[in-house]
Image 1 (tube, protein in one colour):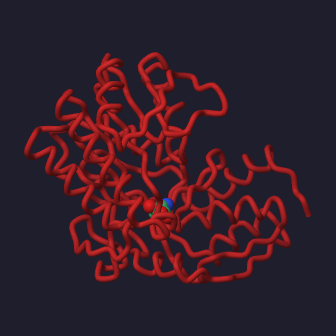
Image 2 (tube, helix red, strand yellow):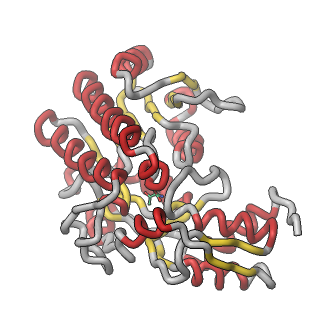
Image 3 (tube, protein in one colour):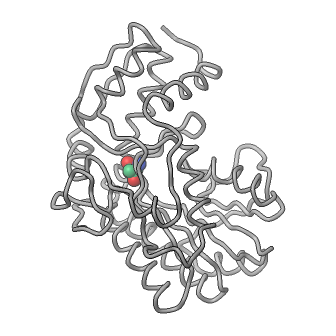
Length: 316
Ligand code: AKB
């Protein structure tokens, strides 16, 4: 088989997607790349790659005979808002170069979009698959433009480009990476360590979320889906649950008695969250390639705490 390349392989999604792809397709068929060097050995080959340089992407794609690229290198919403020029260069520049390399070498491409591809004028509840997309963050601008560019490469050049509008992701393996939804992961870590968490979003800020094992499965499933069944490509709405900080805190308190949450709102991240939907309608993903989540709020919370307890020590 032609090999699978992952960019941004050491990031939040990549560090769990790489092992999952190795299990499914064999480590000898997977090539992980990142602009950073790994601190521990990976199961598969690793190459240093700055994917804002097209020659570097082309060289690796040709040397390893790559047939599928999971392009994960990207700045998340909060970091992007602090560095908008860098966010445009990385998020759009690297996607363009990956799609162009894919066109030249006949590769399929997965690129993640986000709930950040929506904006304040989007319907906030049960946000439809096809609706208004006028984001007010640079992250969202790059996500909408990325969706359009990927669809353009599919339509114009026949590149098999597919994507998902991912919600906030929660993981006990990979550390948070500068997103607005990262409060949810932080809350778990601080609940175990200190039984206390100061949240940077208001208590009633409702956002879509997903446990990482569901997200990894969704990414692999959408890329394996029969192309004849797909009416949409870039990108599918996707969700597993939708909750507020105070609802997550109440769920954690069931397992961590005495857990206390307070709030110190960060205006930048609150404004980003307020511009996003409260809940998505992911009916197209369910109908077109059979998406179904396995973890709801209560199953995810129990599994997160079980896993974190085995690796973190309470400090207080
Ligand atoms: C972020 O908060 O930036 C990401 C996302 C929802 O795209 N987790």
